[in-house]
Length: 346
Image 1 (cartoon, rainbow, N blue to C red):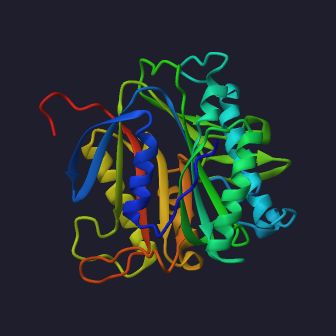
Image 2 (cartoon, rainbow, N blue to C red; image 1 turned 90 degrees about the vertical axis):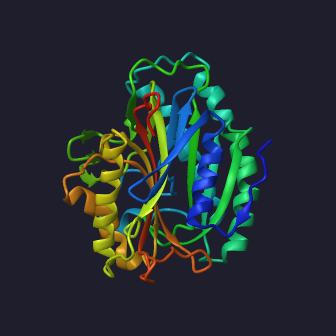
């Protein structure tokens, strides 16, 4: 039985709390702290986790900046988009067996994990509008999840968005996470990149450039990360205004400042950018800020791709403002692997 989805007017806080509620199936909250004006929650997994990028209806490996012609062959009706996203979610989980993992998966682990998928849909208010698109999403998901072996999936939420980063014709992006229950957590803390190995010919992991059918695609995100080992997860959100009275007016400058703050928070927690597993980008005016959001990290040498989603916020759910009233072009929601705290530390 697919548990019913909840449509809600989201906010940064509700997106983060929904993510926390999904992680709580496999994680225990072990504390929280404030780091440079950012509230950080610590979660401790009981088994390896698989955290996915947002799935969209097109081919996973495609060009960045985007080339709309790579999506022209797709069906853009809402039902087809929902089915395509859920199939991609299933395919990413099933691809675990094609990747090198530092922990053992028994024969039934993937099947067990698949049944209990934790899903979240970001549904656009374009096309027939959010309410109509959300109804189609709920109706199609029930049957599609059952067909794909995810019959006990939980839909954590359905959030309203505006444009989709891959192509404005896409009306839905779907996030999923899985707990690999029955697998040992492992002896070494790692975030392990998971690829759809059968869908590309070669990859330069240093530059994150994939070769597919003679074409080369830069990818700032990957299908998923498997997170394992004796470590905690840090869950937090931040923006250019975190711990500040103001923020730059320029969206591009805000992106760079958010990256600076992310690196500073990670460093204080004893981690690095290599520990970031999941990043959700809440973006205002995607047409203006898409390239900065997708390309700024790589231009600064942070070429390691993430499990990521980039969503344009809806008018009913805008980003917040800096204390001085400056509108925020981007807000991050982050899950990163960090060392466990020593006894007596913050």
